[in-house]
Length: 171
Image (tube, rainbow, N blue to C red; front, side, top):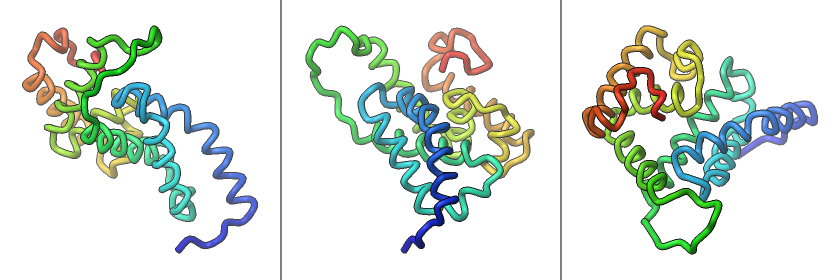
C-alpha cells in the first residue's frame, strides 16, 4: 500500500522522471531494440514511484532506476519470440537484431553481478565508482566483475566478436 505523496515529493519525482527517463529508454533500447524499450523504462519508474520515500534519498538513484530498467529489459528480451516484421525503412537491420539478441543471450549467461556491472558500465555508461555505489560494492570489486564479465562475453561470443576490445566499447 502506497501512502499519498506530498506536492513537493511529487514535484521532485516528476522533475527526476523527466531528467532520467530518456536515459532509461536509451539503455532499454540497447537491449530490446525500439519495441518495448519505453515499457521497460516505465516499469522501472513505476517501481521507483511506489518506493519513492526510500528511492528519493539514494545517493545514486539514477543508477538504481537504470539497473531496474535493465532487468526489466532483460526480462522482456527473454520472452520475445523472433517474428516477421513488416518492412520499415527506419527499423534496425537484420544484422543489428541478430547482434542484439546474441548480446542479450550472452549477458544472460553471465552471473548476476557481472551482468549488472557490465550493463551499468557499458550500456548505461556510468563511471565505475557510480556502478560500485549502485551495486553496493567497492570500486575494486566492480573492476573485477567487469573484467570477468567481459572475459565471459568473449568466451560466449568469441574473441573476434569483440574486435579485441577490452574496454567494452563493442556494447
